Structures are given as C-alpha cells and as structure tokens.
Image (cartoon, rainbow, N blue to C red; front, side):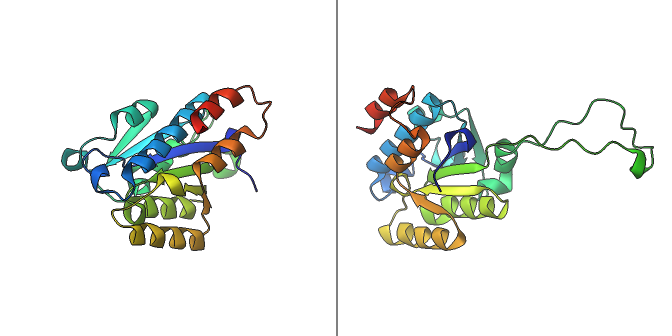
Length: 202
C-alpha cells in the first residue's frame, strides 16, 4: 500500500517556538516538517497546523505557519477534540429545498452523501508521545488512514518519542519518513513537479 497524493492531507502538530529548543533533534525535525509542507503545497494538497496553548508556548515556527492554510489553536492535547476532524472531513452541505422536515420520513429525500474526500492523513509533530500521539489515535478512531512521518516527529526525550512510535504502529498507523512520503506522492520521475520536489529532498 502506497500513499496517494490525491487522497492525502498533511497535519503538522505543535512546532512551537518555546517548545522546539527542548525537543530531541529539534532542528532536524523542524527542517523535515518544513520540507513536507513545501512538498504538499507544490502538489496542491491541504496543509493544516495546530498549536498547543499558544499563549503560553508561542506560535508555530513562522515559516511553517505560513505554509499552513489554517492553524488550530487548542487546549486539549488531541487536536481532534477541538475540531480538526471537521477541517479534514468537512460535513456535506445540506441539500437546497424540497426536503421539508414536516414530511413523513419515508417521503423525505435521502440525505446527500458526502463526496469522496482526502481520508489519508500524513501527520507529524511534537511532542510525539503527547499531542501527536493523541491526535493520531483519535484520527484512527475516526476512520482516517494515518501515516506518521517519524523523522519529522520528536519529544523532549528519545525514549518518549520511540514509545509513541511503538504505540502508533500497534494502533494501525503507518510509520514512514519524509523521503518515503515525497516519492510515494510523486510515484514517477515523469511527474510534472518531480524536479521541484527533488530539489527539496536533496
């Protein structure tokens, strides 16, 4: 099973200015998050950010925040608890007219089915064992297909980061790297954006 760019969305969790200096391998992790966001934008897929209690921890890295189409400020550790799922899978728009609630149920028109969406969530962030873990587990529970980009995730300690990866793999998340994601999204060196993406990976 390979990633499909047309079905993917990217979620970047809590790369915050007051948190990142304490994160294990923080500069490399942030660099990979930026690389992922730039690739996703080149490939015209949605990029979302989250910030945990930004009044205390500050905003996300400014360059990363600028690459996100929207950033969710949250107090719960899981962004799914604060509406991320509605961004990733917006509710279907109600049908216009002709479905009066006063009609008996058997005479009402069936509810409009949701259009096929992007249910593959490529996710990375900090801290891996807290906000990233809880968000990813909730998204799995909400029947998203979750791919965790390990080299763009970390915690304050290596042990906590690795424990998060073990738990996520056990819950059904796919564990990948930035380059795995990039080349699976591309699929071919004939992809029109191949050279642009390759320049970011090298």
